[in-house]
Image 1 (cartoon, helix red, strand yellow):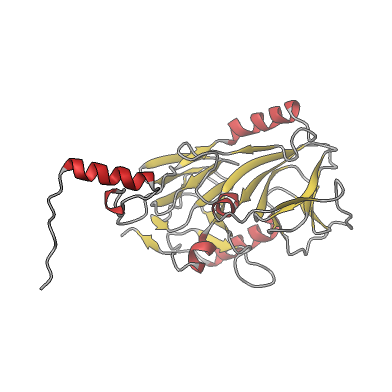
Image 2 (image 1 turned 30 degrees about the horizontal axis):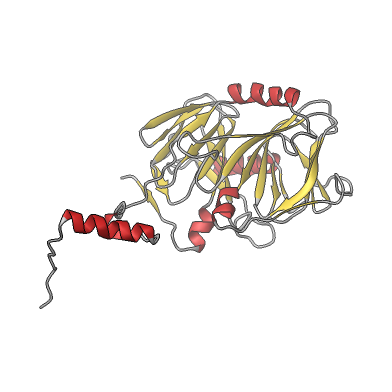
Length: 326
């Protein structure tokens, strides 16, 4: 019968052995950080208020031109992570002023734009002009040419979501600039595979709300689907819109995926882990992976919460799981 061995080495012998390993760039795993029973994210729950973000975006437009910054972007940074909102996804605020163009390029990272402010600017994706109105979701999948333009008389501001940290971690990132500042394009179209108007999503949610009087502890939630495949909008990013009726509270749940939220409209709060995040129109907040969260609409009007996550990656790798608190 085999038994566990007990070798009585002196501290001096072990110290000398570990020094030899270190010199050879080898680490003994038995003195490492150990095995975690479940995921423990370095990220923390955090909320960015629109009342703070918008003045800073406008100030950036005063101080930095598009010649100095190809994309005038404010990156929302988790207090515990290096320059990113969550481990695999970034959340940015981007502003394009009247008459400006954010020049055309493409990259390995997949990106989404959730329009916050402005009416009638546009993004050109692979030569197709896509209009941008508040609440619209506009996609620029990986390696698609895209540029942004604002031919209105007011700022265009949106939330960027990209899988840049994931691409960087996989060492798979490429980038290329277009041979001109902007792409040729035709008139704006609404039936684009890159464009999900808020008007259509809001109408669908309200139809479901009218048919669902009991509620199921989740509010009314819909996933944006890829118009060609029927799967998530992009291979690495899933997007959802959730409607919470006045006074509605969701069950506490957690998932193996990083999730960032944008409050399209409404007022309420989310309990994420042991923190309460009070939100209102246009705020942004992040929910770390495998952290219990619940949402409450404490206002007198419906609340619309847009979210994007890396769930497709976790599902593709058979790592995804979810749990509802009893």
